[in-house]
Amino acid sequence: MSFFLVLTVVLCAVMLGSAGMALYHKNLAATVIAAGLVSLVASIIYLILAAPDVAMTEAAIGSGLSTVMFFYVLKRVRGGENG
Image (cartoon, rainbow, N blue to C red; front, side):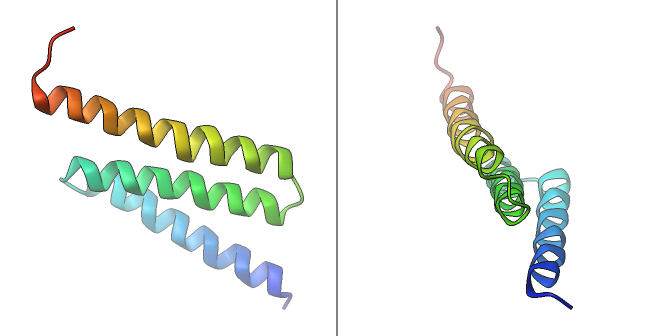
């Protein structure tokens, strides 16, 4: 077996585990972190599959910006701020 094949299978298992955690965890902060981890692992898989442009976009938007926006919204909702 190739090293990249084994690495891809392990990363897919991590991604599935993180997706399951995002679905079934009760803590919203842990759910947001798990969803960000899914995007981060997906970007690593894209890099292994020789798609660096897609990997950079997924890392920046999917893992970075979305996670920051989710945490911002969680802070606003829990803080009870209006407008």
